[in-house]
Structure formats: C-alpha cells, structure tokens
Image (cartoon, rainbow, N blue to C red):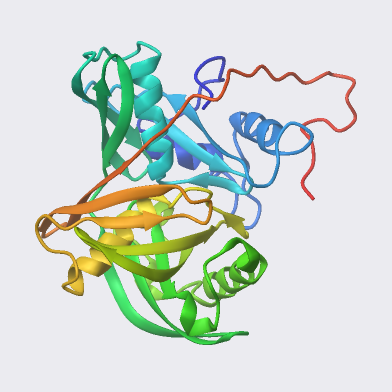
Length: 323
C-alpha cells in the first residue's frame, strides 16, 4: 500500500477518484489516465514489480465517517473492491498507530472504497494483531446457471455483485482441478468465461458503470465439510488473467451470497474458503436484507517490509514493462 507522497487525485468521493484515475475524461476507446497512474505502472511493471502484483493508494475518505479511503490497483488498472486489501489495511492502520487500538480486544477501522464504505474489525491479543474481519457492502445474486461455452465445455455460471462482479463456476464442470498444476488451464477458462459474459445484463450494476462488468471468475471445488459448515477451494482469475493469491475477500462475499441462496449457509454456519496457496478466509452471513446479503470475512495480514522506489530520469525503460 502506498500511504504517502502521492499526487492529489481529483474527486469528491473515492469512487470519483477511481474514475479519474482510470481516465474517464477520455473516450471509451482512449481513456486519459490521471497522473497517479504513472505511479501504478511504475510499481506494478517490471523491473520493480510483476504481473501478479496488487496494491492500493491511500486517499482521503468521502467524509468524516471513515478513517481513510483507498484506490485498489493491479497490472491492468483499478478495482472497485478488494477484501484481502481491506484486511491488510485494517492491520496496517492499527499496527502503524494511525488508529488507536487496545492491546486486548477489537477496534473497527472504516474505509471508503470505490464500491462503498466497508469496515475492518481488527482483533488484538497481548498487543498483537491476530486477525481482521471485514464487513463488505451487501452482496447481490443477479443470475444463476447462465450457460457459457468454453474450450473445456459448457459451464453453468452464477453471477453475483459483492463490491465487484464475480462469475462462479465449479471447476469440475470443465474437467479441471483447483490446484497449482492446473493454473494455466484455470486462467484460460477464467479468461474465456469473462470474455463470453461481456455485456451480459446480469453483470451490470444499477448504480454505476464503474461497478459493472465481470471483474473476476471464481473457479471453485468442494472440500470435506467442517463441523461449522461448507468448505471450498477456489482460484479467482481477474483482470486479464491475473490470479488472486488469497482466497479473494470480495469473491468470498459473492460465494457466501450464493451459498445462502442455496440454503447451504444458515445462522451460525461458517464457510471455510481456501486459496491455491493454502491460505484461508472464513466467512459468514450476517443478515439478508433488501439491499443484499451482508457478510463478514475473516483473515490475517502481516507486514512484509517498507520499500522505496525511484525513477531515474535517464532510465530508457521509464515506468517499466510487462511480459
């Protein structure tokens, strides 16, 4: 996360700042990204970064009701939501002293993201952050069993909005396993499904074009149920073939909404959601309202370092490249 030294991004809200960072001031075919996009490309492209990187710019909140805002980014642009990023930001806010917290107990950190206001509840014990639970914007299921033809066969795809729009499909329908060895095939399937659903009415959000269109494709498989509820593994393919290294936080919210609609998650039930790297989020349904399914997703985040990057004015590679 980039927390200081950023150029100002115009906009009254985080959503407007995100649109301006993307470059909605240009045309649909030739957007004009704002100056902050130079920093995104500098960080995510080689030789400083790589195609699997993900990050965020900390920006002012929409109002005094939140501690700060964030613009999430990846190799191809910007995201409207990010659960694992929200978990990391909650831990950072407390561990850095930006938000005061008890040595034992919990504190809530409110964060404005492009899809709305989310909250990260940071859990502490013996002066150490032990876990973070984020409450997402309400998740809405918009389509079930949409047939999509792929090179692996036809998939029955479920679509849900959970801060970003996700397509969910059992990997077994395509003859695939959710494991590291299958990643190239899973990425190929995810890209095909995302492309096939471009323009599908269930992918459009009634409030904003910024929130519309398939962001990620969740290819999941069943694991043995736990004593507290269902257990699944997933690979989430987002942007142009990028793989989420985490179990995908906002994607977990989408899965929770679908499982609740199927009757597989009741009061007190917990989803054990595992990534291809072996990391785990746990999720539960808080309530179901007219606006959608309210979810809590819990995970952990750990500081890995502080980094300083520079751009030599004589560097002919400038902000870098992607292969």
